[in-house]
Length: 440
Image (cartoon, rainbow, N blue to C red; front, side, top):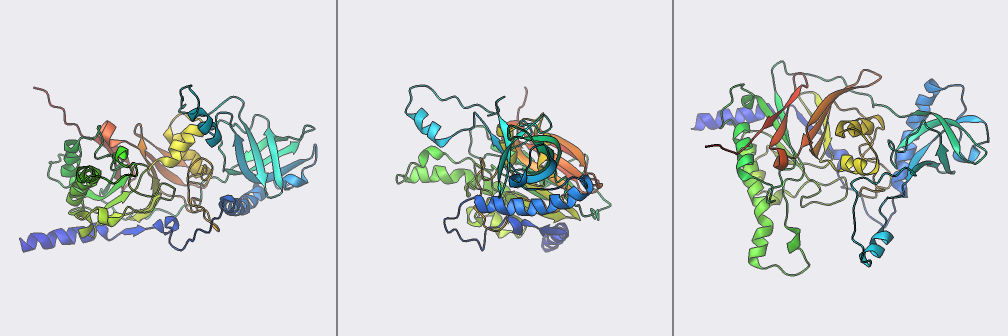
């Protein structure tokens, strides 16, 4: 028995040896809230991105002058750099919500707030100007994206856009593919323990597969070196949180989903390192970046040093591969305020804009940072994942400087019974499905 425990400990040490957390950017530690507004995070974003775009403009159109919005002259071609703002006719407004609450008409909430009359504006510290032309489509861009625009001012005072320059993919460190053997990372999201859709047996089958108790003809389970749980792990019955003191039975109902999750996480952490990220439904702060779930919620799991409670977004390196991802709020918000053929297209845009969550703080809540924007992408990841999506999707995104990024859209486990498995040796990935339906 002692020899078995030593072997297990050595195996865990081997699996943890190449892991490095890069979540420091998303941690709110030395920040002090003094009632500051969100203008400062926009200024920090514009300052950083403008410096970058100015360096790219010299190679893009070196003979075209660069000016500010205030310096525009009618008919003179120039390049302006600023932050996009999208005027949206259907964008929800708190005053409208208040008036509708007092109305007898029922509320209908659309899944997408796009309208043909939407238009874009570009603004910098000196002013703002309405954008015209067909080059810059309002259906693609959202408020908060910083771009460089080539064009000229018209007689009506608009800026006719002739061309657009995005930041493009950030520089990428050469992946140090240290493993010559197959080593796998399992991505899970949307477990929603405690919800009506959650099936504990289904999750238990997944746990048994990860820990090797289910049997595996292909031998994948034995080579799983890491597990990432990308948000929405529990569903708390919010109807109980009405500001009143809870009865003892209601208190237990609140804690049951977390206890159920902890039992299953303990089994995983006993054999494989596991990272858990908060999501929109989890007991964590609502605004991005979400801080790690309190370890005291997981009395069983926290006993293992393989259990890590992480931020959302979450960034880490494993076996020389840089992996970056979110629990899905950034992409869900883009789907509301822009259009794309699938989740992967929205993911591509965030990488090309070099910003994980451009709609923060306009339509997606975030902490009011004063001197930095933590969602700027300074180093291009090798793997970029987004959790809690409707369906699985993956493809390779290629950058202009040879960057290669594996994009992964992770489906909700409670709806699909699917997880995503990534091979660190070659960055190939596939899904595993777990079902509990039996036929007689």
